[in-house]
Image (cartoon, rainbow, N blue to C red; front, side, top):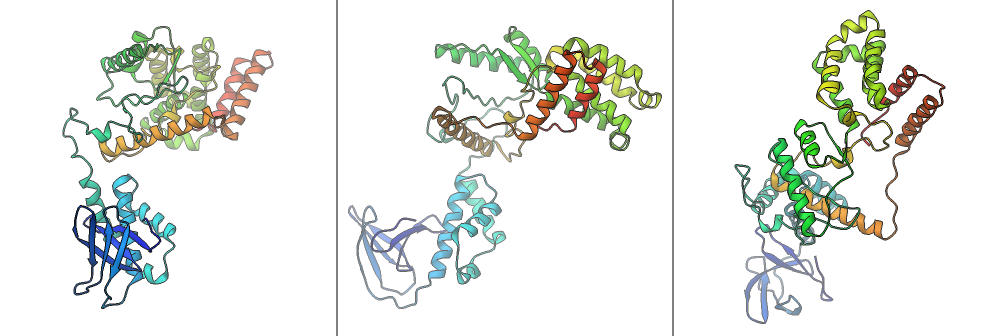
Length: 408
């Protein structure tokens, strides 16, 4: 809404037409010439009118209204206009936009009583949103409209930034095959060459996709490839669930302790992981060995035969998870266009963060709980390296930190 000294303002009708508001009376555009606009009262039979120039600057008004003004209805129209603007520009749920605008508008009781309910206004807003959203693609091969190819700053969105220390690439891939990941790496390498840069990461942190592991080994043989610790523990717990051991895990402390020690093997020195696994299995009670037999078989195959130890072992690393990069991936995205819109917003947020960092702002610190867990892990390492505890005691101590660890 914009105003002039003559109390002039504008809003948009449900049909997308510009309406003029003067002293709580609403006018619609009747005609327009090269230098003037002619507005007439929206009320049928009323002869009041307003003239503005082509830039909507007030010139004059004339005539008396034959009806009372209804300021509440003007507020309702403005409210609906604000809702529509946000609905077509954002991917936020309509119900949330409605609630936020109610709070922001601070409307009078009389105006609130005249507002449509969210369920009444939602269909029209969803329709307006769909009208500006491209048709959903029916295959993985489709044209991306120009507005979805650029950032919110109208820059090419294919590669969002080239400043040292803050690279960011969103790779939307059709599958998880090794050849697909290799093609992505090839594109990134070629792009780096075109900018006189080198794309040779020293360390890569990822999940445990077989295709990705093979592609990294092929394209970046010198890189240290580490798996995400959270994905590792999550994979083990999913197996516990698949084997029907969930209730036993939560109800039996001995079973739970053994499972957590399996998860904590990734925190041990890499040369101690395999022997510690076999010791854990051999020293477990008969009940644990029987109940967790299939889990032991799974762990031995998956984490010693299938995935190299050097990838899932995170001993010595303080940053053991890539979940800060996966917040967007794990959210629900109704369609590709809303997903790209969200990526555009993310790029804008990253750019803003980069500007703050360049201006001297410090990076966000880890949460106190995360620092506390890391200090406990470091203390256990120091005690082990100093000969105060043996490898079994180290594993036992590390397993106690597993329950406290969350996505970092």
